[in-house]
Image (tube, rainbow, N blue to C red):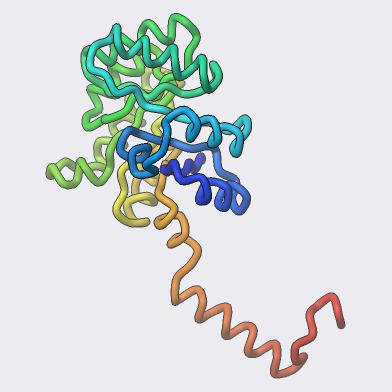
Length: 223
């Protein structure tokens, strides 16, 4: 199971890569634009912070030729190990095919159907990224789609991994993993919610209260 941070905020990346065993960082044009700063310096700083961990960067163009030009710039500036995110359109599939022939790492994004995932995997995409909440908003059964993709890859011995994305709550994150996704990319807000909430705090405070009744403020290593 892999957990990636879906953010381009430097402080968040510094904090949460130090707290958790994060596989890497994903970004897209919307996430990048929120930081309101220069593109390359931001991504270079992210690369510096995360080191050899995965960095997924999305192209912004529509034709496969332009996608390849942007992909070349991304890999040149940020390293060949960087994952190039390509929208899973007909033009995107063509770009993925060329990139995989060059040995590039590819993440097929904007996945809404098992058919898209199949086509991306057929040209060698390393990850496919189904949009969980966005599918739900379109009255598409997100769990069913991920199960279908997982089953499809197993039947045909595909090494492509499912990197689920687009979540509004932690239940969706867990549903995607239980449906067969090997990886998820989540916002810092959702990541924090997984381990910090009022119910957990209540239990921890109860333990501490019971301890201090007998041992006061002493720690285990002080007894």
